Length: 591
Image (cartoon, helix red, strand yellow):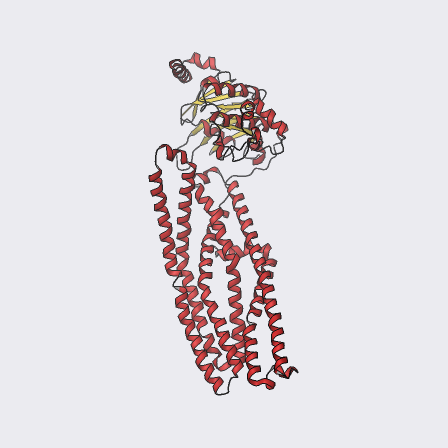
């Protein structure tokens, strides 16, 4: 079954705005009615000058030429005033409507993005999604801002002027109307031709935005590898593709107005000649002829603007398709139904015979069973690619297990309300993400009602308070995008402070000290010892020295658990863990 036309989707989406749409449409029609009145006034003025006391206005009791002209002047004042008033009103209505729909579409699209699983983002670049949320929605706003009003006013002009022609001179009216079917046919033909061109334009700009976003995020890497010229060439190539795609669309859309202008010329010329002959023969008054000449121009010339309106329309429809494609993306993750109040969480975690594979890949975890008693600290170690960090993603339900089940306090995590599940778990990862903002804003992120005093207390536990107090504005210091003004260890300690403030019953430490120096590691380790007391803690570790005091250490290899025990028990087994320990201790001794 074919999907609905994007204009229909947009109209259905804007159902709640229909009162505003009708109001704006009515004002557009009224503005055009008063805009079309001046040619009638010109015709009446010509009639007054030629007929004088026998003019049409004289029949209403205004016998002198002066009184008739005064009447026309007053009518002109009223008509021009009303035209200006309704133009002001419709512009406000259409523009505010465009801004409202743009705002709501962007928020709805962003909310849908936040509900999608992590796998969705792995298949798409940040720039591509930014292009939909920003550029595509802006294209739609541009059309609603002016294009919708233009279409309504053109339709109004055709109906009003066409009707006036048949009233004034039925014998020549058809000559003025004759070009309109050809213009409409040409517009539809151009629309069908332009649609794939503008779809390609939106695709190309999406690729370009993706590359730009990627390069800006990796600017330090680009500079360190002196790859500026290479990246400039790559951006230039993608920008050139975008330009060529636009040029193909422009070559077609630019031909619309000249072709339509030729068709219009035939209608205008026909009225000029045959209407003039009718006026000379007495079949048409001079005033009516004047009105028809002016109205012909008012009828046909605005149709040339259909090219610009059509251009806006096709760009908007191409963008609308992309926006609604995002809104139609199915939500794979089940939101859960069972509440999990944090105050009632004991923190017992059980992974029961779970298996998981990333899309189109072999399983990275196979038939794994692991138990974490409430309030205990366990560690998971293993070589790179053994599946350690994947356990974290499954526990937080960034991904769903293929088989088996994960429970917290004997409740399947797939049954727990997703926000409750993630509120119960605090994550401190190796790849710390800090937002552009102040130190304080980043510490209270996720615990937005926390006070400044609470944030300082959390930072003190995380041993972040001393270095924060040395910053230029202390807790109000701006740290830059992704916290780039701070060192790795400083970012890590702010992340720990954030977790302390959240105070979750379950804490996950995913390689939390792997990217810091020994001094910073020691500071972080002291703070971790404080916050892991009486709290279920799962530590994914590379540095074995940081987890030697864990209640139980699990060793993973190729997605399976191959060893389990305390630090001393595993060393006594002289197996895989003991080998890891000897390698690290040897490296430490060598250093």
